[in-house]
Amino acid sequence: MKIYSNGFFRLLLAIILIMHCVVVSAASKSLCVFDLLGANGPIYAQMKDYKIAAINWGVDLQLKPYISEVKAAMDFKAGLCDAVSFTGIQSRQFNSFTGSLDAMGALPSYAHLKTVISTISAPQAAPLMINDPYEVAGVIPIGAAYLFVNDRALLSKYAEMEGRHSNIRIAVMDNDPAQQELVSLLGTPSMSATIAEMYLKFNSGLVDVSYGPAVVYQAMELYKGLQEKGGVIRFPVAQLSLQIIIRKAEFPAEFGQKSREYAFSPFDKAVLLAQNYEQRIAPKWWLNVSEANQSRYHDIYRKTRISLRDKGVYNAKMLRVMRLVRCKKNPQLSECTAIDKE
Image (cartoon, rainbow, N blue to C red; front, side):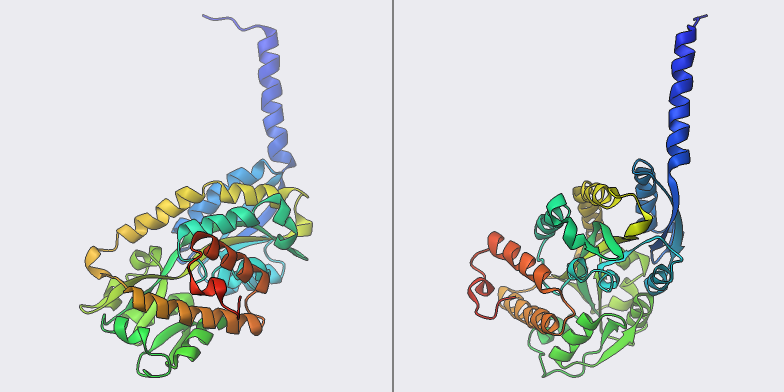
């Protein structure tokens, strides 16, 4: 039998005590987590990993699941949560810069999104992450948002329906002026709803068009709403993100920056997960968009972004950042020489 020296046992005891001190010294804070599936959902699972990482930054996070991001935002404002994670759409009220990341049509691909998140997660961009008393502590991709339609004939109608097709019913989130502005420009009737209600109305045939990332296709059983004639338009409406917001004064000084760098580090893994959900949608449902129609889509989304910038909904600085990224990757875009720049 191997005999260990007293020195070994003293070292082992020291290690145990150090580990114990790390746990004890970590301040306990609450993190309200929005996930449509609650504690059983994929976002909540991600936040479990985040909780483990946060121990190293001096914080022991207690996770609280929410199936309503509006309720999560309300509780965060009321001080019932020290931190919160939800979509960029909801985070706009706490930081308009990162809250404009999901602007309609602003980021055509995951490569564009990676460049932007990498840039804003760097220490040099830290001031833009702070809007006292709040700080954005991380941005994680959820996946590109696509249009779900119950009739593939809408693909051609949608491209030319600006002000001319008023019979297409679109579900929009009741707390997102961007979606409301888009349908206003298109001249189509809309039905206001929460995220969950939006998909239920689509599945029941109350609306013709809904949108979201591929992860909700299975989670909300959107194949029911597609019926026999429907499909998924293969043209991203927006790049959706999960954003972590903290009440800055409640956390250690370096927590925000360490958290942002951690949140960005598994970017490629998060994108692979999003693409995996996209691949689970059967090929027969995907509807390709012609180059001519893509040009029309870009024009509609650009008008929406500029209108919402002028109304103070979208942050002008973030729109400029995303435009620079688009033009760097594709200088031939007409917007890169347009007079009315974002």
